[in-house]
Length: 440
View 1 (cartoon, rainbow, N blue to C red):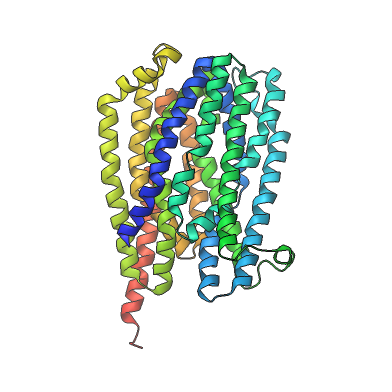
View 2 (cartoon, rainbow, N blue to C red):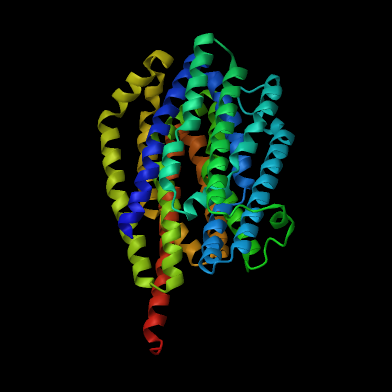
């Protein structure tokens, strides 16, 4: 099972590696064409819409995997189709809500240093990107049917479109609006491909819902799905605030130029951040099946071994970056910024160190979700947000980009300790109960 898990992660990782490289290419063209200040304004705007979109969206892919596996196991195709309809309506509803909220609150990011009210039309235009942050149900369909290879192949399409359009904007000497349109177009293509793949998979299996399934009772046969969805939505919203509001916080204290450098830091660290997310996506279906089957010892072993093996690879990446990071940054961004981006090396190294902790802790959150403890996840996420966001604000205010990076190390270490302790205690309790139970 561990071998299959890492095979799935590797499939997705191959696509994301190319996407990360292409993402750096898009940043190169954007900074070369716009300069740090204008690029920082673009980053701030996109971060705002991304924050709103991800805070509002429901993690319907988890519901599709958790409840869809049960529907298919008992061959209840109608229930499965209602589940897909339920997730699709949630996706569309939250996408529209995110668009409206971003457009209505666009003025909030204008007081950020170096961003004047002259940019309000541009911020309203970029609010469209919030609509493209939601496509969780098709993703859940692909993961449920173990189509990780398809995701790997199609993953680079959106980033490829982005770098191509940014290159055109750079060569034509176009302005901020053109680069913003390039980012919007690439996001739209990326989401369209994902939705098409998911629904194509349903059509191949005769499981695509019809209008009757959209009009029927979506929750029939899916006990507790609303509680599951709402708890996960609230947990994800808190996690977004804790981990993705950093762009706006950095912009507030360091201005658009500072947030442009912070974007480079995060892009560099994505070489480990992406695998951590991919591991979560891949391990959740495995853990859900093991918990349902009562294989608690195997469950614990998969959590611990998976995190440990991931950490070994992550440490290797940190060592490589520590040795050759300045030279790579200098080489890649020389033409665009006259070596200014080398200032991102130290924060990038610290951010990568935080990702090592993320890799080790990556199985803990899906483990709690697989146990059916979405509400427990929510309570822990709320506590973590109340602690880590003030630390991020204080560290950024006092120490700039380096302080923001150190706050990420603190956040990941605290999350690892708290969620790890909760998971291990719950698993040990189940093992003791199973050992004490009389034989059947």
